[in-house]
Amino acid sequence: MVMAHASPVSGPAPVRGSSVAARALGAIPPPALVLLGIVSVQVGAAFAKQLFGVAGSAGTVTLRLVFAAVILLAVWRPTLRLPLRTYAVIIAYGVVLGSMNLFFYQSLERIPLGAAVTIEFLGPLAVAVFGSRRWLDGVWALLAASGVLLLARADGGLLWSGVLFALAAAACWAAYILLAAKLGSATSDGQGLALAMVFGTLVALPFGVGSAGMALLDPVVLVVGLLVALMSSVVPYSLELEALRKIPPRVFGILMSMEPAVAALAGLVLLGEQLRPLQWVAVCCVVIASVGATRSARPDV
Image 1 (cartoon, rainbow, N blue to C red):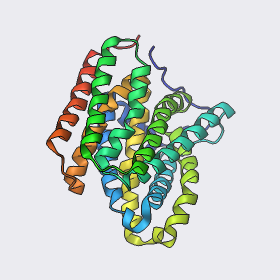
Image 2 (cartoon, one colour):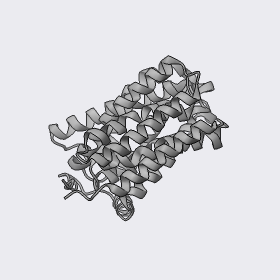
Image 3 (cartoon, one colour):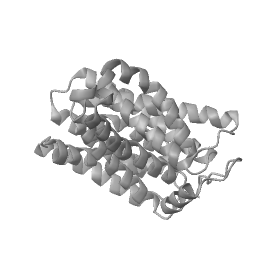
């Protein structure tokens, strides 16, 4: 089935800036939107990890979501006159988004970026597998899963607490994909995302303030937090939401199989996390599975 494009929500027309942003996003092919989002979020995660020593993982998440909410509200200026059913989707999306980020950053504080993302990737992988009726897509998904497990195992010395947090983030990521599709159908442009980011911020705020305190107001922390918000929230979520308006969640989940490879490369380049030969084999498995699944997936009608 083809996902229906979102119909305009009743209320004031979006401002000129939001219309320009919407047209710009609409001109980019969905696969390119997903790839750009992947690169952005992993580079942002690498920068975020460098803040952990000052603000902690929960404090970094809080800064990221606060800045992201402010930016998205300013850009999209969402209307508040929405049906209760739409608000239910927005709130659910926001809670899942905030929880996913908290769990992932807790994992990232304990295990390497590449390992954390490969484990977290089990979420979208599950969406890809259970949403497909073609046996060939199942083969590609199994190959990607083998790469994920091999990469995590080859890394060695992983703390169980980090693995459990990554698994919790994986469950939230699967729910995020499905809810993002509903959000894209129920709201126009990025208005629903802006409102959902507010609810996500409310989820993270008590944990961030409680753990980091006044460190959140350090000028350097604020600047890096703003950069992380742009790269890890504003840019990728906007790109992914636009992509999910044009492709079904199953195809989105398949495309996201490139995430572990990009995370491993980001960890290598930005954090100096060296990859062993066996890890490179695992990365290649994931990339081959992604390319194969994308090429074999027929357009939904």
